[in-house]
Image (cartoon, rainbow, N blue to C red):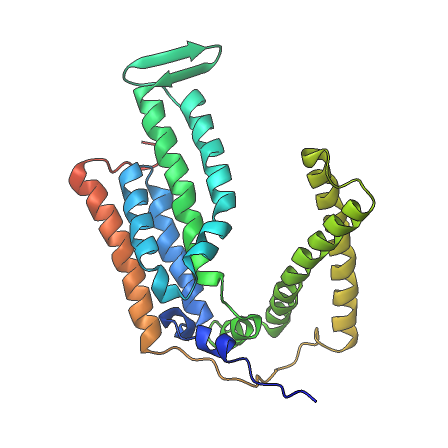
Length: 265
């Protein structure tokens, strides 16, 4: 005979400041944290924004190791964006190397560093803000605070719920390929073949889910009620004000040191 005990650790983990912020406020925060970085292309503002965001990781309730693990795609793609700017940006200043259409100069090096940092600065807030968002809380916020149509909201909930299945499908395919002796060679080819299979699974599962939801009346144009209320509180105001301060500090620092540069200038 065994006695089951409640999962206290799971409840204890949801005590961070960000857990009390409405998901709609997090979406607005993404806009606040993205627009200034998209409007400028200097390395100072991106560096300051990333530094402040990393310092505020404890308030997000995400472990540092999880942030580092989820940042691996950013660390992989940011240099790719930087290399393209390094080779093909408009040259300026001292020319260091030149071959075919590629020219490496002082301006292209500075632009490459700025673009690589900006990619990381744009992706990091997504990791910090949406790593612990519950699909039901997101739906409640979109429906009751943002006043979006229920049909769209329910579709978002279904899509978010299916995201976790992608990871399980990927692991199952890896185990199946290894059991058949074809999972230890051709890393690149294996990745693309498994990605294609995962895409097929996603399309089929999405079609079946859409049909099932329509059959159960989720697509009906009626006024729906929601079991849990979703409201904005003082915590949301403090959170959004903090995001504005982060961008003000990043942009102000770039202007103060003279590195602020609009995109296209």
